[in-house]
Structure formats: C-alpha cells, structure tokens
Length: 87
Image (cartoon, rainbow, N blue to C red; front, side):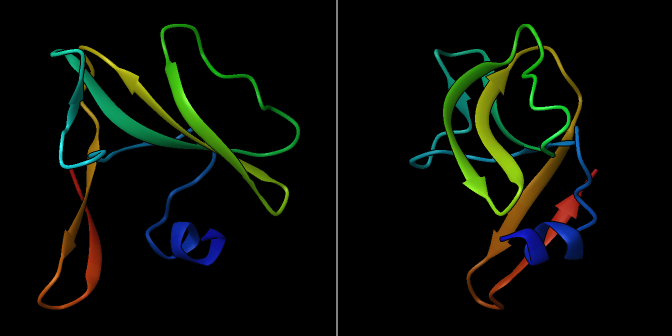
C-alpha cells in the first residue's frame, strides 16, 4: 500500500477522495477521504470524522470524511486496472 501511495504522489497530510461501499458521501454531505500520517504526526485534524484506520508499516492510514473541501479524487478504471489521481 505504501508503494501505491508513493506512486500516486500521496504524501503525508494529503487527502484523497474515495468512495465506501459505492457511496462518495457519509450522512448526505461529508465526502469520504483517505489520509496518510507518519509516526511523528499521527494527529487527526479537527473536523475529520474517522471511519476506520490501519497501521501500514510506520504509517497510519485513515478513512474519514470532511465536508466543504475541494480535494483530489482517486479513480479506479476496472477495464485497465489502474488508479489515477484527479484534481
């Protein structure tokens, strides 16, 4: 997973918009995101609602939701099997 984040240039403290169970939003207005933290700054920012997390190596990867933000979107194209960050 870390190699994947590195390949799509997902650094620490960056958010990438994702979907969960086919839905892009939680509770009608909060968009799902994943965020990567390193061991020195594992503080989840205020307003970021955590839905799940996992320790991947020395990184903490969090699935959460925000509202009112303009962020990148992570897309998956099943026909090609590639993931592409979009602005």
